[in-house]
Length: 357
Image (cartoon, rainbow, N blue to C red; front, side, top):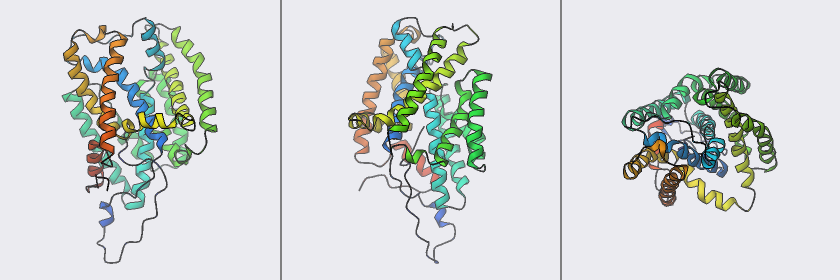
């Protein structure tokens, strides 16, 4: 989900250290530069937009006795329920697994203790998530990602890639059948993202539109009956959570595969301009969105649960517009978002360059 380093591309080989270099010094050097892959930035930015739409009302309920209920029955609420709810956190989870394995590759090239780097990264994320959770919003996802990363992702680095790829669908199926989806899908999605890197899929994501387009069509064909199943079940039905979880994964698959295919069409400049700046500063934008939603909720007033979908979309759109403008302006001068830079600094134990020279 949150990437503080360029997206995958093969790193240049690291030159041999001179004999006079102090032992262990390489442990404090930043990873070699990677060429960014636009598709991952676009997907991350697109997912950020969707997750904010879903989170506006839950965040706004902080300090309110009301409880967020199911979406209403109007056309707008139905569209949000079918195309947005539980469709974007799977994308974030998948991308977190991708980013984790990319960091592992960089760490292995730079230090003899790569898992120490990974551990430090997850512990810093846990600290940030706990502050976000207890100071601003109990629905924080960073804490979940950090804990699952420590329990699942970090140990998986000792497993062969075929084992990681085999465990991913097992954990996804278990999360669906036992819990109906939700955060129970995170371990499987983490491992799936990791496997995509370890098998080289992430490096080939932009080479041809044919495979992503074919996969997007396959996911769409499978999603149609899943959406029909979801619309035919009531919120009180035991199958509702399962139907939403299955449909959510399939729609997420359409988005993840469809966007790289669209990047091979004339809309590529538009997609890159709109979503890539948001995606490159995903951690900064995720955390600042909480503050902005809370501020807007105080101005609007009322019970967030009763806001119409038009109000929710207007709030999310306004916040994203501000974040896009700030992100685009910031990235013209700096290599990383502010929080991404601090996270990278804490991960490697050395201050990385920030300004673009």
